[in-house]
Length: 281
Image (cartoon, rainbow, N blue to C red; front, side, top):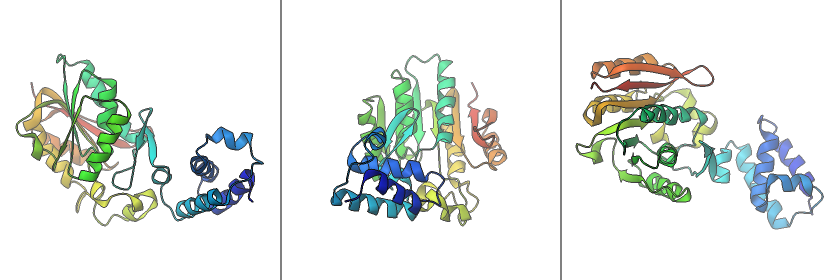
């Protein structure tokens, strides 16, 4: 039988093309065993059962083919919370935490004792659940057009004991009637159709509908800009994530709809990532 240290060494060799080869191998073996990673280092000489070795080898082969580690493990951390993920939803990424920060910053200045927050295209629910977790006084509404994504988002809300989120199925603002919100946030599709990035890295395995933003990548952002003035409370904030070269375009979209105090913020890598705007008071 194969020992723990032998299995990890072989897996690292198979994943040598990945900078995270050692970490990926340890995460996948620990998960296959149902043990913490520290156990692997404490018991390197333990021999693995053939069924464990087989299952681990299969997962390493999938990772070697490029499948995201988050999908193989079935979860990803976001805002210090662990979210269940699947190929039905985008993998939560650190840059999207800027949406959460922007919303929380605005809510700190809100006079509404029960602020209303809207997350458009919620996917795994990571933004909506993080906001609801941070602000149990807020009433959060999460919208997505994909039923499987909404089911996963509901599971993530339950996983974290969050009860102040309402989930609605529909396309962008369609299920909301004339409701207005203190904050609207969204991480919409913003990659242009045909962009080579759609065929690279983890993105190859993620849902195309959550990534492809049309010929210029702005289709969803236009819909959000057009609808936001009709669904923001006076002085309310809209914050959207976008591509690093789309800040000027999103600024123009918001300005054309009469939104004010428009500002584009950069992520930790210094790339333009989130644009904010406010409804007139």
